[in-house]
Amino acid sequence: MKKFSREWKSSTKAGKQKKYRFNAPLHIRKKLLHSHLSKDLRKKYGKRNTGLRKGDKVKILRGQFRKHEGKVERVDAKKLRIFVNGVEMPKRDGTKKLLPLDPSNLMITELNMDDKLRQKTLERK
Image (cartoon, rainbow, N blue to C red; front, top):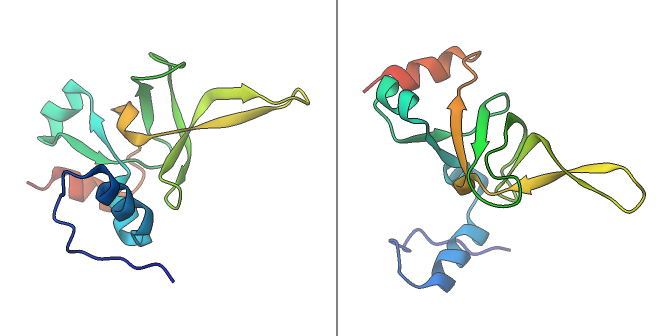
């Protein structure tokens, strides 16, 4: 069984940070899946970042697919990874597979506002 402690308190040691992320339960992992908002969204909502959801439009800031924009197809809270439409790697058999991305390397450019609860939480100060 995994051992999780809330006594981490933002240690500077990389090993403790990795251990915290690895052993974190799903309700805390969901909070680790946040990305920065673009400048116009930041001004509109008065927030710096927010959680990623399926349907959000994101811009990739780092890596091979830098400056690529696409919609979030899948959010994997267990592995802390985001899958973006159009960011694919070819497999040996010729098929393509979505590439997992870290949420810290993404910037949200457009929010999926289908959920009314999300609208309320974004607009409250």
